[in-house]
Amino acid sequence: MRTVVLSLGLALLCLLRAEAGAAGPDRSKIAGKWYVVALASNSEFYLREKDRLKMVMASLSVLGEDKLKVSFAALTPEGCRRRETIFKKTSDEGEVYLSEGGDKMVQVLDTDYKSYAVIFATRVKDGKTLHMLRLYSRRQEVSPAVMALFRRFAKEQSFTDEMIKMLPSQDECRVDEP
Image (cartoon, rainbow, N blue to C red; front, side, top):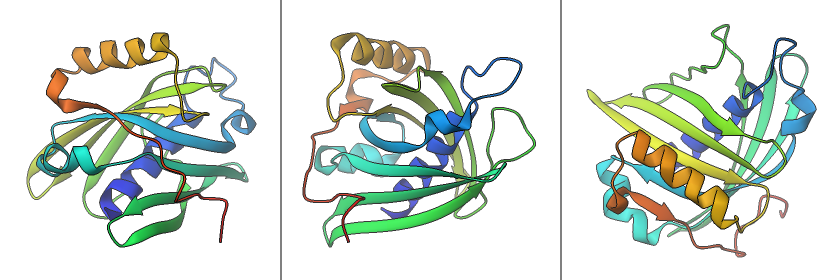
């Protein structure tokens, strides 16, 4: 579960890059609360456990020019797990690398900053390349149009219907509570 939470936070960091234009993204647009509302993955763990997964909540804060603080809240079998991580932007535009637990690359495929972001992540662990597509939302619900967009991106990344999961909401585990 720790790997999933860290990977989700890494993907959120990539929101800083999405559709930014020549002047770069307005980092203040990424700050605030996000929910991971849908996933698609080829990970054996994900495929085995996806029916038990629920939404993850994250809160983002921009720190200076190149750092982002991501606070997570994820419901696990052991209860609510909260974690806070500081991520540092790499020099590679559109990619972020974090070496903990394996090599990871994440890319924002689409976002409007206001309501959704579609993020693609690749991770190498134990010699296997794992892929995950995530749908982030400012609310626990997404419109049918945004869900259709996510499904289209999932198909473009070769995910099958069995690999795509809309996550049920959860109120038991919130990032903004002690």
